[in-house]
Image 1: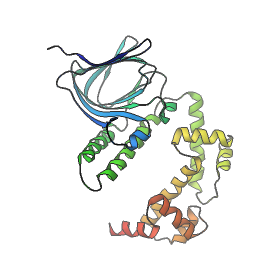
Image 2 (image 1 turned 45 degrees about the vertical axis):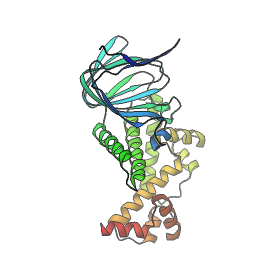
Image 3 (image 1 turned 30 degrees about the vertical axis):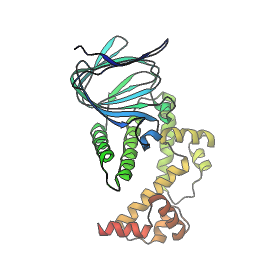
Image 4 (image 1 turned 180 degrees about the vertical axis):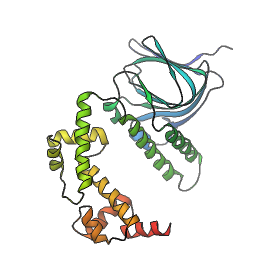
Length: 297
């Protein structure tokens, strides 16, 4: 029996078609029928690990969602604007919602893929056209997604917590992949100015930083700085500063015998009590318990 297009939608301005032949295997990380996850919080409405065989084919035109695909093994063939490109292990394909493209398996091909909603927070950093770049973290993301699927199948008491933690790590490494994408010159200059501000913050965490002061360091208005930091870091400026402070605090608790008062002063808190309260809220345990756990390990 001939292989058929197993999924096909089309309209006046869009097409979304998939040929899924016998021999293909697919496991979903995110699916509308699954329970809620951290991936869904970031606009990933469909995602999976797939092993394709020829003649697996996807053909899309203005599908209404973005596609991020990591080639894990084997070879695929991408067709964009009449030009073919081989998709090999380690390649990252990014196809925005308003693009037209076709890709298919060339023999056998394994991928991890994510369908991103049109209004995902990542939309602002996605390219305007189909892009293929070398992925920096393909092995890590592949391992994380494999373990994520394992935890979905487990029935252990802490499986849900593990699943959420893995989803957060997957999101983190997707962020890292997207941050390598070519930016418009204006965006590159803005990101450089913001990174220079963070260098000053890390060099002097004891300073009483404010959002307005950070913006002045970047030669931006407070609203501009806040908007760009949220775009690049998915967090507010002061949340980024807090992360730097807590990272330094964890390092000092792990590798030094400094008192809590000394650590508090080093990372910008007026007292050990204020530092301990902030640390517990951020990390989930008190500085003393954190240090004790490190020493016992």
